[in-house]
Image (cartoon, rainbow, N blue to C red; front, side, top):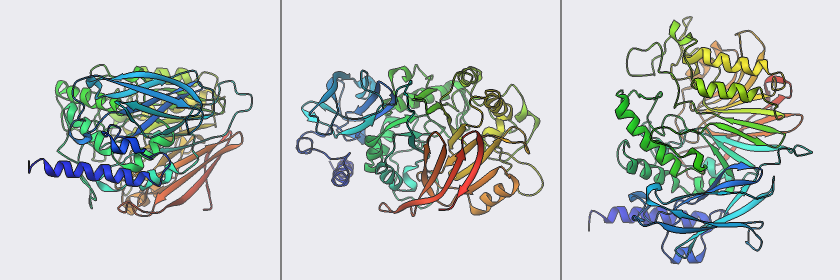
Length: 518
């Protein structure tokens, strides 16, 4: 009894905090029925993969979220409803799904038949308990006569222990159409300084352990609010599985068979906790998650997978990807960041008739970054610099397709700093595309000295800052693109203020970073 009591008390504290936070937020208002009945929707609700005629709705039944979920083995009937209005007076679509133990009693309802380019509200009901209400939005019609402006946020790197999610509280209050998450949704390991809260257990390697880690992160009320406010597009990076892994090995687990078993468990748990369609459900250690997402005639988003297919690290004989290095192997044309199949798919998609703007959403800084201090060259082998030929092929595809040329934007995460860069095919050549790295929600960043060194050695890196956490906001219309970096004053404070830190503009047909006054 005494051993179980702290776990139960912690669970009640988490759920009580969620209910208290919900009172001031329209997307976390727990109705009286749920508060007085068995708690099922402790991980909130979410939507994702928006299309012009529908979305994916997600939830997971988890009355005991941090101890395996608490649902047992029996399947549970779940009803979902989509309404034209927040009060659910006019139902637009409804249906039923079965939540099963094999998928941690998660639900991925693929709704179709909705109208394009408009908001909807949704909810779930199971065992007589009703979920919080979420809001979603369909994409504009592919053939919209007057292409509509697009506004979205992009974020990454939310190490739970290193800070609170004030950035998500701020995001949930903004008028975005959707959110793009670029990876490191969870962290498998503990690191960094000044932890303000803590992981439970060690480094996950089994399915149940990954499920509990996702559940811990998703109990955060501000993350739930951001999920409930907008549809999300999601990809992964390394920490959803293991730091710096490449294809079938990681620095921590170099035996491919052993590592692929870990990867299979990690991919399964990722699917169970993300608002993605059944087509992304893993088969063993494999899952196809890359794809194109069109938002009318204004925007194409190409969501890429930068981990599953990439070549192993170059230049390094040991097991770590951290030392800076330079060698001929990193330039080899055989090396690929995306894998040959994904590269070919992307090149083919980029050659197709485009929307007005092309956004390539991928995990890490794409611009070349000579990081070694002094006259010598040194590169980080886990980034695109370890796959230089693969990057060149991607930029060549953009340059070769004149209809997309100049209107291509790359959004990135992973490196725990805000960056704005001109993407060039040659060091002194013209910009082919423009890149923005949206910082990190909480994860600690590089030192000011390291950022200053990168800016000094790489003139195409036009802006950099690593001392602030936050996210980015991108707005697109027929004339141009604006990007705002929004920074958290202190990620160690749950109530921290969030404010604009820097603003940029990109003109149509003229790639390159233009810093605006804030």
